[in-house]
Each structure stands twice: as structure tokens, then as C-alpha cells.
Length: 185
Image (cartoon, rainbow, N blue to C red; front, top):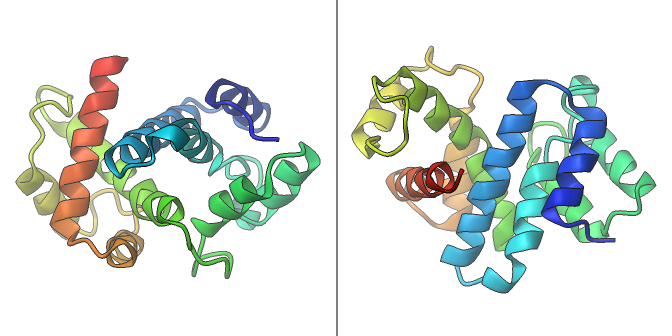
């Protein structure tokens, strides 16, 4: 079964109650949809968004088994194996040995941590918005390892490398994606 983004969000809410996790899932789902369209996978935009929504399905209840337990949960719900592989692969070299293979999986790997960092930068700004956020502001905070310390710079950089993009390209594109989501909501 390949759940729609709406069905995916309902499934996510079965295992996640915290506002932060729900907002993060919507953000990553929206960013993934934007990238699908941007990279020529528009016909798969729902699939990419679904993967983004479900990627942290197990995190709130099973943080020590993150990307491991979600495989079991998704299988129990009859979710398509491609979604299971994709969501699990964002824990590559952290909690699982499932390497991102498809471009969509590499994007998820790269943007999961990055969206959190960009969001943290945006809320510190007077506007509290992505609209006036620029690369240089994100890069300045990126260099400060105490800022949004839970957002792994190593994972972000590894993701950019997997995609064959510079860090600046990845950050710039993700800011644009987050602006787009902000305008649509």
C-alpha cells in the first residue's frame, strides 16, 4: 500500500503526538514535494511527500530504535517496501546500514537535519519567516556548532555530497522550498 500524504499524516499521528514532531513531518513532507517537482519527479510528488511525512514515524515513541522500529511499524500497516526503505535510509550511518540509493532518498537524507536548522534560524529573525532568510544567515548559524546542536552538520554535508551538490546549493534550494511551503500554508 502507498498511502496518500493525508493518510500518511493520520498514520504518523498514531505514533506521534508532540507538536514539534508533527510540524517537522509536515515541513519535511512539503520540502520533499517541492524537490520532487524541482528535480523532474512531479508525477511522484505525493510519494515523495509521503516519505517525508513518515520518515520519523518511530522517533517519538522509540528514539533508541529510530529507523529500525519504523520498518516494523510500516510493515505491520502494509506500507509499500519502497517507502520502508526510503524512510529507514535517512538513518544511514547513524542507526542503520541502509544506504540512500534513489535520488529521493538522498534528498531526504540531506534535508531532514537541514530543515530543522533552517527553521531554527528563521524563528530567531525579527520576521520569524523564511521569506527574508538568506544563505549567509544560515551559513553563519551553521558554523556555530552550539546553535541547533541537534542538527548534524556531518549528515547535512554527507547528504549534499551524495547528491553531488555544494552545501550552498543544498541550503539555498531548501530555503526556497521552505518559503514555498510557508506561502502555501
